[in-house]
Length: 250
Length: 270
Image (cartoon, rainbow over all chains, first blue to last red; front, side, top):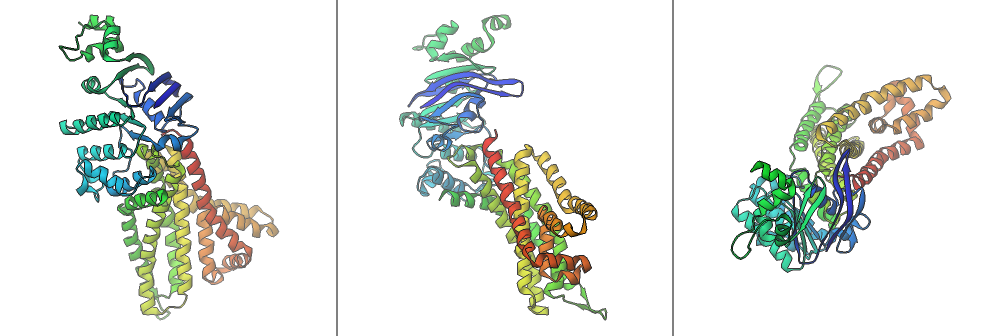
């Protein structure tokens, strides 16, 4: 389970996150959407321990990420937007490190990489791999081990169709395993496809939260889920820019 | 197990860097050159022994090792702040800093052993093995200096937030440690009463890792001969507890900055 209670973060004069409260239950996938600077990455980086909140608390599997960071991160998988590891890192060594850190046998990391078709790249550095292979390797290692929370920041950005499928499969597998999954994405089709709930953020604030049906009702967008895909882009624009801005544009 | 995996991970990355092997080759060539460049009183070229080569190599070490170690440490420190994936693992952040220091210290030490070793082989074969123990001790001093430079560099890199700033601060630190601190020491010693100068000198030596390494290096090889009256005074000073204090000071230049860097990294936002 992932819990954020009244979390705020400020960078200089800019409020990046304004008293955000959010819970992601076990086996639930929640998507964070919003324009650049909405606070999505800030939220995820606070959960991963990269940023310290100014106020509020962030809890993973019952452990506070500030007061009990090691135990909180023991069952957390995190895939940052940037690589977050030197390009000179050897994939096999990184796999061994992730396995050791999570208390798993050394072979666990190698097996995870093999599952993603990377068994022959163990001696390669991340810099020697293609962008897609690199992202697959990082996804394999981020999801390694018995996790209780999985946090992904733009996981399918710059991936080809197969790579994006891998990401979706990994998230669905995590959900089936009872992991609380929180991800940020600009790919609204992915969000509509995967998320049990969608959180819309603007300027550090949560402006809407709910299932597709609930957001459709909130925005007044007509949608019959039996006959059509969700008009998520229309809902998004209304929630982010407001209905009047959308009408002006039309 | 985690610490070993972390060190292996950092070591694999460190040994793939190009700068350290280049330094090893350059230092080896310079060392062999110094060993071969001796002239006899009659003008004939001869291979210098370990003692004379060491004194020449000491100066080379005091200029190049702090520069390289500070720069490597600073860049490595900046990289620490970019390791979002690693810092999300259940690893204390201080361990990440210590592991990076350990890996680069190993890499630089290997480069120094290669450099000194190449000259040592030439000297051993052509000029005999007299003073080889002191030569080995000098390699140890150079390693301690590299270790201190890396620790200070890591601190700078973590605090500086940005590669260009970190490199700039590292170069300034190098200039201060190699040149600036000596000017301050000369000025201070000239105004201090004579009877306090001895311990003031020890304190000043301890306050600068480069001076500590210089004093220990000279102390290994009859400083009174190679550095005249000031060298003799230094040798008298280092004959007592002064040497242990200077050595402890040099080690402290690794431990204290590393601890500060680890604590700062643990607290700061990435």
